[in-house]
Image (cartoon, rainbow, N blue to C red; front, side, top):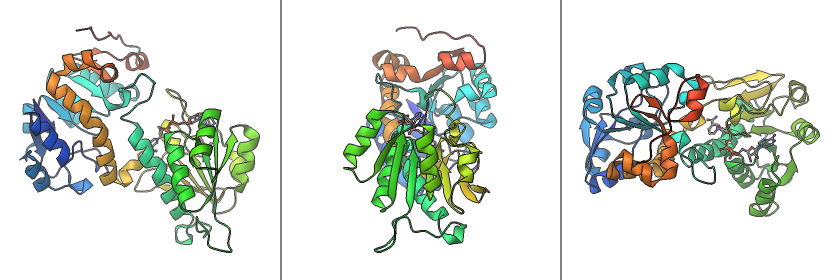
Length: 369
Ligand SMILES: NC(=O)c1ccc[n+]([C@@H]2O[C@H](COP(=O)([O-])OP(=O)(O)OC[C@H]3O[C@@H](n4cnc5c(N)ncnc54)[C@H](O)[C@@H]3O)[C@@H](O)[C@H]2O)c1
């Protein structure tokens, strides 16, 4: 197969769909990899690194889309890219079609096979190609929150870990899933006093066990949340109800009770946010204040650390990418149920129910091969 890797063109997106070790793997399996000139620069990967791994560097993105049997990307294609798609071409990337009707209709018209990272799903319900980005966002939330608390950034001037003889900061984390548990690990590691709140007792038990009592776990209810939020120096929102908008667990009134110049990082903002005063922000202008509380609500936090995020993403995309290239898409999806769930579009048809339902359109289950 010919694999094409264009440079991402979405504003601010610095990740790339493949790393040099991924190129080597495809080449070792007998495939050809075309990488657009400069595609990896935002992630600190040079054309020469790709060349050494066996890729061909191509200046014209048009040529890549013309020749590739499978395009590997990070973000959904923009208008200019949709026009370049060819019938039967495999597009392997984050698609998030259910929130974008124009994109869905555009790709249907181009008759591509759209394999969406975000819907590849294992039998236990987990989404292995989304997990690494939640890990990144969770870990980053503490780093960013610590920065927000510094006086130079308008914060209350508290060091997260404190020092001997001085109390550490109090960090309250809502949600002990992938992002929340990663936030816990970093906050505890930095010496903060951490409380994590979840609605699932099994997650609380797990956190209690792995952190060996070095944090406080609390059941999620309004009274516990109100009490903890009022005491927090840094509040991190990382709850998720799969397939739904994030529950608004922290009200405006609770925010009024927070300390002046305390900080909030609402990771769940990409699902609407779990704090009533949250609204989406960008890396260019990441924070704003409400009632003297700093709010950080960037919807694509992993974009702040593109190198780490690119490597974390490609660690999990490569295996399925190789399977598609080695077996061909039809055989690959008949062998692997998780990958089959990733196919949202198949040559002009919607093959993922939730996408069709979002726009009142028809869908067809993928035929068994
Ligand atoms: N902003 C970003 O750049 C970015 C990046 C990655 C992930 N995210 C978002 O972070 C959020 C968390 O993702 P995740 O992968 O950790 O999800 P996850 O499913 O692993 O964890 C979510 C946790 O929330 C808990 N929860 C649900 N309802 C709750 C409630 N009422 N009270 C307390 N806890 C509750 C669940 O029990 C679960 O443990 C999602 O909204 C995800 O989209 C954002």
